[in-house]
Image 1: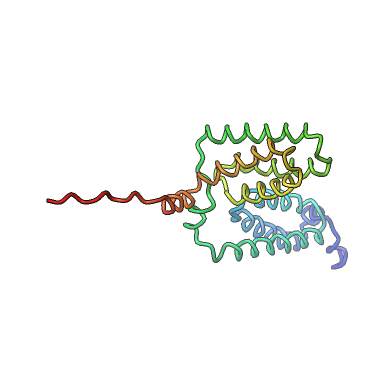
Image 2: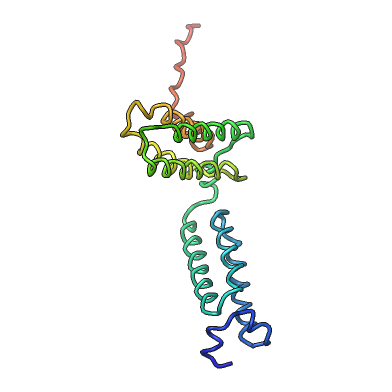
Length: 209
């Protein structure tokens, strides 16, 4: 098999023929897979691992492209988190929810989805947009570690869409506000700030001895 032929060959074909290039490709694929599994964002990690698992069923050109993109993604995510203290993440971007609170929020999401479906003032484009962000919220609630940033992004986006509809959108807006408020109050860093901002009780006049 020529160099040009091996570049376009299916990886399975190289493996069956015992081509020396297969061992190198296998090592590259394994390295990418190990790197992908280090990604903290579970959604990104799962997608990347699935993509890499399909790469070995393609040509060497496609595997190389996927490998390059995978390593680039890993490096960019590592760089993104490089300057963020892990303690700060735990304090400001983790929502500490009990199971009952998660259930209540999921019920609110379901209610919001029903209101979106029945809202005659919304266009199909608006419904699709809102349902997309509601699904992002629901996905986050099913995670073991719930990130607050996802709720901020989703609720800001939905609230911005609904603001133009005024009173018609009030029930749906209230549901979104409830999701944002509930999660915000379960972030430990926000609880500490609320405690600091609370009015301090003034001491009464001291009794004269």
